Length: 261
Image 1 (spheres, rainbow, N blue to C red):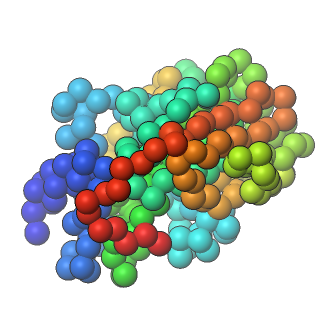
Image 2: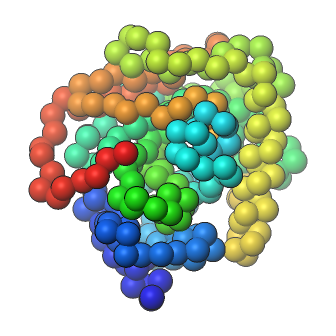
């Protein structure tokens, strides 16, 4: 098994908007360590062609998402500058496979990690919510960059607030004006602190670190929600203007058969 060759195949399939085809048919067996090695090799290929790492994500922090994805531990992924969108954006469904969203909090890294937990703000995380293997969900999830496909940022981060204040108000996800789920922020300060620590330790194992100006997605207390062409998505939180995205109301049928969850 040549992880370098697998990484190139992963990137080619990701560019073609059919991520993770190497996991079809259950023929590929990876340890979690190999899956992370694969993820970092794909990230290195993206950087070598000029893409910039904008930050990192941690997923499966809540029991809700762990039950949904069948895991019992967090997973990590890379966030790229090319996949950052501003609130009010229109997303092309042809650029994703099994598009799903989460509403969660992110932080912007300041001068150092210890002083970087105050600028917290709500975001919409985008996912290629598709699994092709019937086994080894964790390895496929990790090898597919924790199924991360982008993030919609608020129009302004000037309202960023101390995580201690997050516990007083709920965060909620709305699709086409209908409430999909809501969660209070009672655990937000602990979750954000734990997420930053976990991401920091994770990167240290690979000789890397979070840098000033990068963002960290800290995991959602709510499940993933599938979206369709024509949907209007909002994440609402307290005094922030809603973070919004629209899914373009057209999609061309894929020529590749997919195996959605």
